[in-house]
Amino acid sequence: MKQSQATCFSDSNRYNKKMAKITAFIPEPKEVYDPENQRQIMSSLETLKNQLNFAFQKDLKDEQDTFNYFLS
Image (cartoon, rainbow, N blue to C red; front, side, top):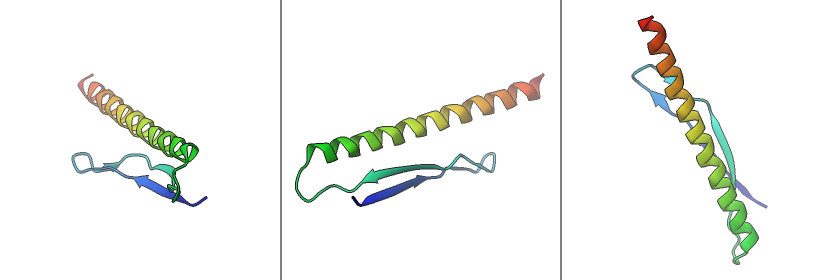
């Protein structure tokens, strides 16, 4: 089965840092409709969404912790 690789980076100019690399393998759709293949694609996209949300929330927490440390 052929797979595509999605790699996401985020570059924040404000703090000049990069978020963690997120890699997800998304299967290529088959020429003939196959429900199992569609489930695999949806599962891969859901995993990618969860990884992005988790990384974003961690960055927000780290930013807030840094700000709180600066104020203390």
